[in-house]
Length: 218
Image (tube, rainbow, N blue to C red; front, side, top):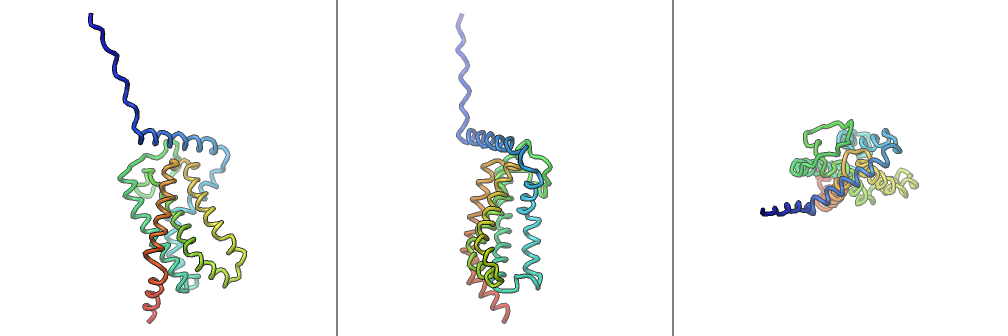
C-alpha cells in the first residue's frame, strides 16, 4: 500500500496581508480600550468639526459675506487657498476610496453616509481635510499673525498654531477611536493632507492671487 504524502502547508500570507491584519488588530485594540472611556459626544463633535458639510459652507460664507474678516486681500487669499485645498482633497479622496475599496471596521456604528464612496475606509477623508487645513494655516501663519495683531489678540497669536495642530491631530486620531477608520487609513489621510496643503501653497501662492485681486479691482 502506497502511503499518501501529507498535504502541502498553506501558503504564508503576503506582506500586504500581514500589514492589513496588524492594522486591523491594533485599530480594534485602540477602539476597545478607549470606547468605554471617551464620551461619544466629544468624538462626534470632532467628527462634525472636520466634516466637509461644515467646511465648505463656512469658507464660502466668509468669502461672500461682506462684513466678515474676508474683506482684505490677504484674508481672501487664505480663504481661497483653503477652498482650493478642500476641492483638491475631494477630487483625490473619492477616486482613491473607490479604487482601493477597503471596508470600514465592522464595529463602525451610526455613521451618516453622504456618497457611495463613503462606505470605503482608505484613506480617511476627515484626516486629510484637517491636515490640509492645518498645513495651509501653518504656511500662511504670517498673514494670520498680522491679522490677529491688528485686532490686538496677542495672546491668541502665541497659541494659534498649537490649537490648530492639536485640533487636527485629535480629530484625525478620533477617527480610529470612533470606529470609523483603521490606523493606516488615518496615517495615509494625514500624509495626503499635508501634501495637498504644500501643493496649494506652492502653486496658488500669495503673490499670484494678490495680483489677481488687484486686477479685479481695476
